[in-house]
Amino acid sequence: MVFIEEKHSYLSSLANQPKQAALVALVTDEVFQLPQGSFSEPDTIYYSSIQAIKKNSKESFESQYAKISKRKVSENSVAPFIHDDFLIFTLVIGVLKFECDKEWLLGVIRNRARGKVTTSFENLLIGNYLSKANNQSMVLVFLFLLDKSKITNDQLNEAYNTMSDTKESFNSDFIRIVYYRAFDIIIQFKLPRDADEVSRLLEFEGRFKKRINIFSIVVYNLFIIGILCGAYKAFQLLPEDKKLFVNDLNLILGLGAVIGLSGNFIPKLKTKFQEMILRAFGYQNTK
Image (cartoon, rainbow, N blue to C red; front, side, top):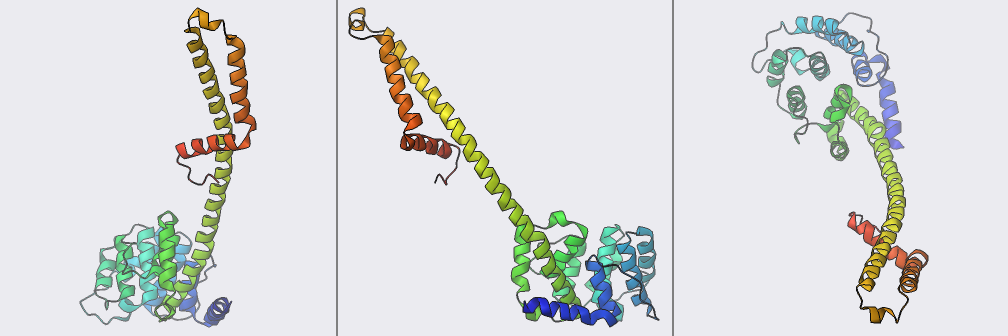
């Protein structure tokens, strides 16, 4: 409950912070509107790129990317846009979403100060989503936006475990926004899916056991018929003088009735036979 209140309070405080609010709109389903005012060129490109991504406009994004990619980047550059996590994350998403050339952006990222966020940007751009060096919140939000099919249950668990370190997660507005969104994804994406999977598995288990019950009855009775046929053939091979001591038909029918009734109407024997069938199919929980 405390976490939810903190999240709500923080996100509410972003109403007058257009850069942070724009990122929230990018990573969620919120409607995005270009903020009004005078902004630097990198910030203008940032806002316009988010709008292009939200509208799924490749042409608009390419236009913004062409503007920013004209800038020359040198080693240890102190240009503010290079170290702008909001802008770089947006460009990574747009470049991969619209399949733009990523060499310039890769060069920008590799000239940033090294750290977990920078490493994550580079790994996202080259498709290395499983690296332990990644910021798991960033990876999860990125994949949810671009390709949900790449999100695995193990990845969700890994993200949850690493995100538990709030000191790391809350060291900037950028990380905090991504962190909150990642938690939403875990709740909305992972838990319902797990519940559905468990529900389907339990439903299948019920159907499986019912089918095995029917199958075991059929197999058991076929087994009895086999014994009866075998006994009958064996009886026919007896010398004629020994056949006089018994009535072969009555004997076979009587034997079949005893065995059949014992299997179909004595629960313990019937259950044991069903357990044997279940184990034969690799089902361990026979209780």
